[in-house]
Image 1 (cartoon, one colour):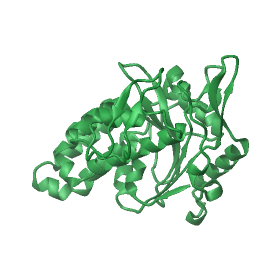
Image 2 (cartoon, one colour; image 1 turned 60 degrees about the vertical axis):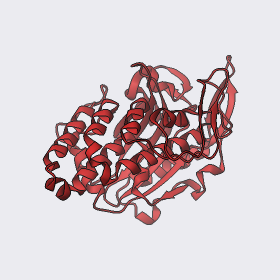
Image 3 (cartoon, one colour; image 1 turned 90 degrees about the horizontal axis):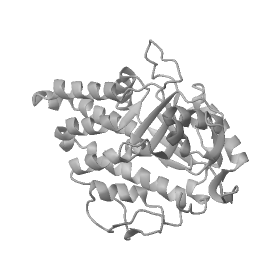
Length: 343
């Protein structure tokens, strides 16, 4: 378990990057108004929310926007799509947001998790669900794995974030030694250590790197560090003049079925109360399976049961804050699966 007390960690998804951009606008309306940018930036925020709205095809849409007072669940999908391909979801996080008390639960699902691919009729790595059937199939497959309803989804394409990073003039990253991706079946690149700032391409390669001993778990941690650094710089008032360009870039690489009205309400609400975020990663073991001897991450059944009970408690608005825990209350890094070979 990791207990993050700073709001910026919630930016593990582009959904929250949009929220923080909106928050910068709403929180600084006085200063922006004096400079003549209040009305312009507010309109840009609303337009970006509208452009990103993409409801799921297999689910009915309500005429009334959902309320953001009660707990709701959201599947966060980090996608690495190149050359207009759909891509696979390298990051899958089942999230419970409790606006009434400012608590957020994030359950990370290793990309190689062996799971039923709902709608495909196969059992495969859960990361393939998005490639096979987009957010609809990813949502349905995660719902079956966790036996928990997903109210909304948010999908981001990390490709677009190279432009955001460069627009911000680069971001700092915790790289203590050179990152060298040189596997026979991997894209070749090197990211130099201990630099003050990294470009968009370097940051994306940092996220993609997969040849360290931590496997999926380490990759998830790098995703978090990347988004945290990105949002920390975006949330600075000194960057307000770049928000229109950032919103345009993010809007082209982000989709969600959360209506624009709810996005705006959520952005404003998160500015008014404190936040506490707890994260957890599914436990299990890596092994080779099947006729092709492919590598999978096999979830621990008892851990799955514990996670399902945890989600149910977080989704219950009557659950007191003192009981909002994660399974076992242990460091999520205590049980890392073996490294995943090239997919």
